Image (cartoon, rainbow, N blue to C red):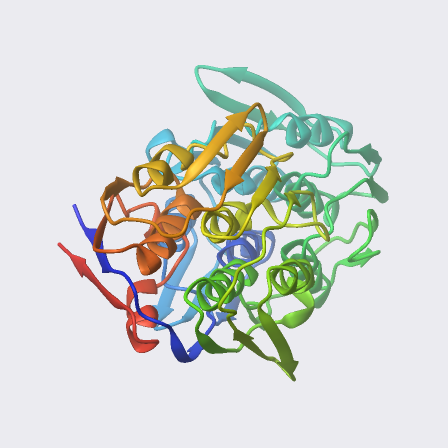
Length: 416
C-alpha cells in the first residue's frame, strides 16, 4: 500500500494549477444516464472516485471512453437497473444513480452506499423526495428498491440542505411530469454546476444558487459537451499550504468566487491574499493569528476545509475554537495530529486548539479524504520526517497532490 513521506521545513513558492472538482464531476457524469447519445466532459480529474463512477456507469449499460482528462459517455444502451454492493460500497456519491435510473428505466435497485467514515450521512432526503414524486420505495437486505411508472412534480422540503439529495432529486424532477419545487435546497457551486449542465441538456430549472429551485419537467434531454468547474477544496488546500509554510504561491485555474469564505478566514490569520482574474496569490506571514471557525452549508465555511485549517491553527499564536456542524465524526484526524505534537482538545462537536511553536514528524494514518490532506500539510511544517499511511483516501479526491507540492519546493514523495 502506498504512503506519502514528507520532510518538513521548506517554504512553498511558485505556481500550481487547480484541477476539476470531483464533487461536481460525479453528479454531472451520472446525469449522462438521463439521455441517449454521446455526452462529452472536459477537465475531469483523474481520481479513484471518478474511476469508481465510470465502472458503475459501464455496469448499468453505458459506453464510456476516457482520453486524458476528457470522458465521453453514451447511455443509449442503459438497461441494467441494479447498482450492486461491490461497486457502490466504495463511495457515498454512488447513490446519485438512483433517481436517473427511476426516471429512465422506471425502476432501480441500488445498494446502500459507502465512503469516508466521517458521519452517518443518511439518504432519507433522497428517499422521501423520490416518494413525493410518485415512486414506491422499500429497503431490503441493504438495497434500496424504487419504482415508478410515472414521476409527477411535487413540492419537496429539505429539513437540512443536502448536496447529494438536491442533486439526486433534480435528476428525477427534470423528467417528471409537471412542476417540482425544492425548498431549502443546497446552494453549493457543485449543485449550480449540475443545474447548468441539466439546463444545457434541455431541462428547465430556475433558482440556481438559491435555496428554492423550480423545475418544469420535460419529456427528453439532449447530449451535451461541458467542462467541469475547478475544485474549490483543492484550491483551499493549497491556499492553506502557502500560509502554513510562510510561502508565496500563485494558484491558477481556480474560481475565486467559490472560495470567498476561505479567503476571508485566511486573511484573518495574517496571510496576504490577492486576486487577479482567476489567479489567487497567497503569501504567508511570519506570525499566524488564531481564529475561530464554524462549518456551515455553502456559502458558509466548508466542512471539507476544517481539517486543513485545524493544522494551521495548531501552530498559530493563541487559542482557536473550531465547531463542526455538518458531520458528527469529522474530528477523527485529531488523534493523528496530536501524534505530531498538536495540542487539541475535543468536546462534542467542538475542537479547542492551543497553538504550539512547532510540530514533530512521526508516522500517521489517514482516516478519510480531507484528513489525508491535513496530515500532508502538517508534514510540510513538522520537524523531521512524517509518513502518511493509508493514502488511498487521498487518491479519491486529489490528483497527484505530491507532484504539485514537489513543484512548489516541498520535500515530498510517494513510496509504493
